[in-house]
Amino acid sequence: MLKIILPTTMLLPMTLLSPAKSMWTNTTAHSLLIALISLHWLVPSYYPSKNLAHWAGIDQISAPLLVLSCWFLPLMILASQGHLQYEPHVRKQMFISTLVIIQPFIILAFSATELMLFYISFEATLIPTLILITRWGNQPERLSAGIYLLFYTLISSLPLLISILYLHSKTGTLHLPVLKLTHPNPSTPWTGLLSSLALLMAFMVKAPLYGLHLWLPKAHVEAPIAGSMLLAALLLKLGGYGIMRATLLIEPPSNHLHYPFLTLALWGALMTSSICLRQTDLKSLIAYSSVSHMGLVIAAGMIQTQWSFSGAMILMISHGLTSSLLFCLANTNYERTHSRILILTRGLQPLLPLMSTWWLLANLTNMALPPTTNLMAELTIMVALFNWSPLTVILTGIATLLTACYTLYMLLSTQRGTLPTHITTASNSNTREHLLMTLHIIPMLALILKPELISATPL
Image 1 (cartoon, one colour):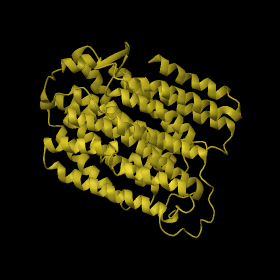
Image 2 (spheres, one colour):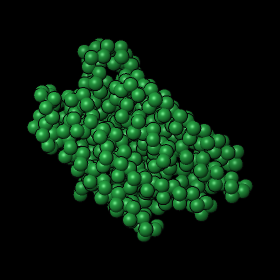
Image 3 (cartoon, helix red, strand yellow):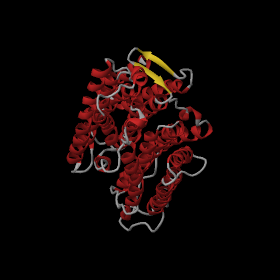
Image 4 (cartoon, helix red, strand yellow):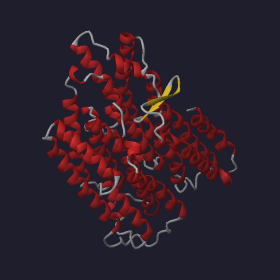
C-alpha cells in the first residue's frame, strides 16, 4: 500500500519544485509510472483477500477500483493542459496539487478495512473536488454547483457517521471482515431498519440514486475537464463500492429496504435515459447518462448475488472509462467552439476527422455494442435482476433501448449535419489529445480479452 501512496504524495514536491517548462512532463510521467506499478493489484494473488497493512486490505471488489483510481491521475493531468495553458504558473501548480491531494484519499477509501478510516477518506475527497469545481469551473453558476455538491453529500453522510458509531457500540469493532461475520442483531426491528437506511443513504447520494441525483448534472456542467473525469470515473464509483460493502453488512431478510431502492434505481435508469433525449447541453447529456448507468449498478448491488456483484463491478469499471472518454471528447469540442450547446456545435466531422473516429468508438462502447465489457456487464445485471423478479426486464429493456437512442442522437448531432456558419476555423487535433483517448481505449480493449480481472467478486 505504501509503495503506491508514498510515490503519489511525492508528486506534490515534484509539482512545486519542477521548472515551468518541464512541470507537465514530469508530473504526467511520474503519475503514469505509479499507474503502471498499480497494475500488479490485478493479479489475483490475494484470493480471497490480502492485508496490505493493519488498516488496509485488498480483495476482488477493491482491486479493480484501486487500479482505476491510479490510472486516472495521469489522464486528468493530460486532459487539463489545454484548459490551463493561459493560466499563471502558480495556478497550474495549485491545480495539479489539488489533483494529487485527492488521490491518496481515494486509494485509502477503496482499500480501508476499518469503517471509520473509510468514512474519513470518503468525506475527505469532497474538499479537493469542491476546490476544483468552484475555482477552475468555467461558468458563473459554479459556486451554486459547489454548494449543491457540498450539502447533498454532507447531509447524507451524517446519518452514515451515526450508523457507524451505533455499529461500534453494538459490536466493539469497526473492522470490516469481523463485522461481516458478526451481523449485529438490532434491539428492535425499527433500529435495524433505520441503521441500514443510514448506512446506505450516503452511498445512494454519491452513486447517485434517481431522486438524489440533482447535484451531479450541475457539478458536471460547471466543473473543468479534470473535475468531470474525477466525478464520472472515481467519485461515483465510491458510491457503488460503498453500496456493495454496506449491503454485505446488512442481513437480507432483516428488512425490505431493497424494494424502494431497486424500484427507484430502475425507474431512474429509464427516466434519465429519457431526459438525455431532450438535452441541449452536451456535458449535461453525458452526466444524465452516468446516472442511468449507475442506476443499474445500485440495483445490482441491492440484490446481493454473485452474478449481480460481478455485473456491477464490470459496469463500474467500463462506465468509468467510457464516460470519462466522452467528457474528454466533449472538452475537445468545447476548446475549439467555446460552446457545449448541441445545435451550435454540430457537423464537426469535416473539421476534425480523426476525432470523429474516437467519437464513434466512445459512443459504441456507451451503447454497449458487442464485444465490449459494457455489454457483458449490462447482460449480467439484467439476468441477475430477471432471476430476482421477471418484471424488471421491462424497465431494463426500455432503458437499454433509450440508451441506444440518445447515444446515436449524441453522435449524429456532434459529428453529422451541416457545419454552423459561425464556425469558420478550428485548430487541428493534437498528439496529446490522441494519446489521452488511446489511454482510455487501451484498458477497454484489454478487458474485452480478459474480463475476469474485474469480474470475480467473492461474497
